Length: 371
Image 1 (spheres, helix red, strand yellow):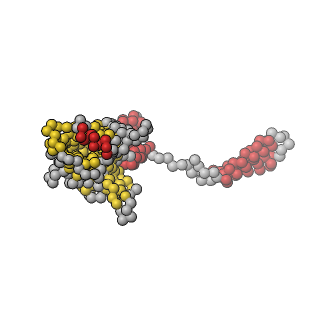
Image 2 (cartoon, one colour; image 1 turned 45 degrees about the vertical axis):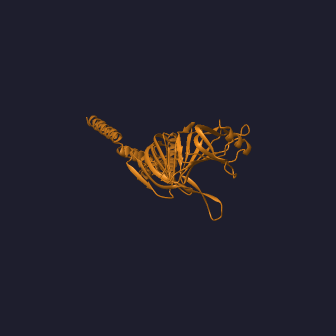
Image 3 (cartoon, rainbow, N blue to C red; image 1 turned 90 degrees about the horizontal axis):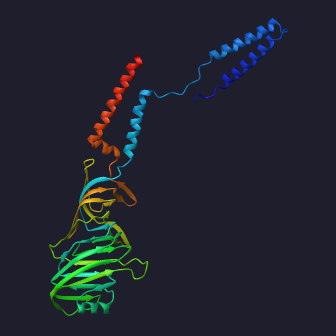
């Protein structure tokens, strides 16, 4: 829209007034010729003044030929800032601990345990072995340490919404927490066994020639309450490691609690090393000790976990959240839509065909316009 011109508006108003006076006086039979000539001359001068003024500036219009280029530039800028919704990835790492969150109920498969198993947080222990159940009933919910030459964790079952913490070390720790119960651990043992409750002394050894079972569960002690976490420590020989495959967590974090100089717990990264590959862009990201890595919105096709001196994970699938974190600063590792399109040759072929078709249509229209 052109800016207003006060002088041009004043001349236009003056011309309208003189033209009206000339019309009125020309219709009056008593008007003199000299008066009419003066009004006519004044009207001519005003018209000359209007004609001599520079034309009002018009807003510059974008040439039609530039519109497609501007549209493409806008689309590219938008695509460079928008991450793709879900990104395929493969990941291999080592960490001191890992935290897995599950949206669906599930269980850890059976594992033989080296010599000793400790359970803490249970609200109920059941076993066909009377001596063991009598001891547990007398001691209450104290931690239970069970030793036997043949010892197997048959399963560790968790409900939907559970969080599982796995920590490596001389004893492998499994900690399960969930908003609802029950959390269930089933153990099988045989041979000469002993057990200890809380800080008390170990029980006399008993020989179980046939395998006995034990079930420890943690449930809510009152309606509406959250059950206590159920923790297990699995004995581990020098060269022994535990393996679990096929789990389907929806989120994974690598966070460990540390004790600072002020004796207050603080969160730190438990990651030792990680190699992340993004097939969508061909990018590879290497993370070192202390780096933070968060994965969420997971749909996994591969899950392999080995726990010994470290927690080793091999994952493959897709993720909606894939980020590193330093303090409160989070950096997404997901590629932008532009990066994905740049690597996707099928999409590039589609865009090339579209541009070729657009050029052909423009040439045909130009030929018809020339005729």
